[in-house]
Structures are given as C-alpha cells and as structure tokens.
Length: 326
Image: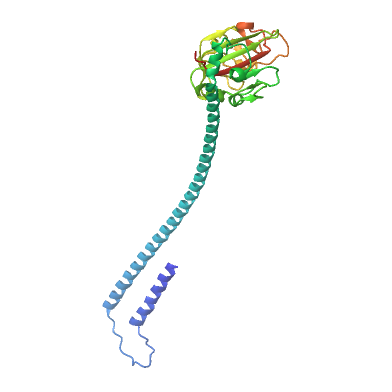
C-alpha cells in the first residue's frame, strides 16, 4: 500500500513538472513564439529527476526494512504469547503439585500425631508396669495379652489366612487383618514408631505345634528409613528362652521378592517365599509360608536357635514398646 502511494506521488510530480516545463502548444490564446532551447535547463531538470529517484528508492528500501521489522516483531510477539501460555500451564501444574504435597504432608502429620498419641498413652502406663514388676508380676511374661502389657504388635502369624509372600510396596505400607488377625504393620510405620522415641524394646513370641511357647526380648530396636532399605540399625541385648536368632540380622537391609538387598548370590526372599532382613540367608524368618501342620520344611516360619531351619512354627508374633525403666 505504501509503495503504491509513493508511485502515485511520483506520477503527480511528473504531471506537475510537465505542466511547468511543457506549455500547451495548441492553445489559441497565446500567439506562437519562437522556441528557445536552453541546455542548462535540461541539465538542471535531469539533476532534479535523478535526486528524486534516489529519494524514492531510499524511501522504498526503508519501507521494506520497516515492513520486515514489523513482521519480525509480530513473530516475536506471537512467541511471547506462546511462552506466556506455556508458563501459565506450568504454573497451574506447579500449583497442583504443591496442593498434592500439602495434602500428603497434612496426612503424614495426622498419622505422626496418632503415633505420638499412642506412645504417650504407652508412657502414661509405664508406672503401672513398674509397680506390677515390683509386686512380682513380670511385665515380660510369655503372655500375648497386649491390653495387659501395652505392647504394640507389628507382625502376627497364626493361621495362614494372609499371604506374606508380597512385594516391596506392600511390605512398605503394611497389609493383613489388624489388630486381631494376621498382619504386618508396614516398614514405614515401623521406622516411624522405632524412631519416634528412644529405647524401644522388641519382643518375639513363638509357639510350636506341641503347644510350647517361648520368647526373645531385645532391649533396643530401631529401623532405618527407606533410603537405607529399612535396615536394622539398633538391636539391643538379648534375653529370653527362645535363643538369639535376630543377632545374625543386625545391620542387614530388608528384602522382598521384587527387591533383593541380601548378601547372597541369589534372592533369599524368592527362594524362601517371604521377606526379611536377610543376609545369607537367615537364622530367623517369620514371614515364610504358613504350614497347616507340623512338618520339616525350611520354607516356613523359622527360629533357628529354638527349632532349627527344618521346623516351621505354628505361631509367631513381634511386638514393640518403649523400654520399661527400672
């Protein structure tokens, strides 16, 4: 459009120039005169035309540059609009993630508060256990009554109603039928429980197919976080009558059928159909397959220091509580 206007402007100048320098020879109002040729006028006119064309050409070049700059700016503006739209989308995603993380944090805060409330109740009853102990009734007797002893059960095997051959995620979150059935509390909760307060005791209650019951007590117990594969970081001194089958597993990481952290060439979890703090492979294994009758089988519920590898127990329970102060 601008180029057309420039050309029109040039034509107008040409017309005006012709009017000035070329008079109408057919006019009857002016008598014919003798034409006088002046070469300087032609030279002057040529210079004017030359300068005019140079100016027009300069204007055309500048117009093209301006048009190119305008096109570039429009492209740049379009890119900026696209970037703004992308940033809005990204901000929406970030805000959604922040909301999700906030909800998770709030839920974890609720769970931790529940755990702390639970332990506060346990601490409130410690004086009761101390009095009972001083009166001759041992709080560490081979009873499975949690309401009396205020132990927290973290694992129970009793009838084979729950499959314990599970993957890492299930062992992390827990599974089964608490509080009275077969279950495992979950590695993450176990980590939180054993690190929420100092001096956690671990008690393991075992029963064979003949009805005999024994126990193992450890005056310290702590589980690391998932970054360390929930390894046993603390296992205190042993007492009891079942034998110390846990010492072999101190400092070992937890393994499941889909996450092999043991020190064996193969997968202990896959070979023995369970999950545990395996080394090469175990002295104790309370998550093996449940047998419905007495049988010699090392792929079962095993406590080597009492019944050897070839005996699968009828009952097993793991419990924890804050250590009773003497």
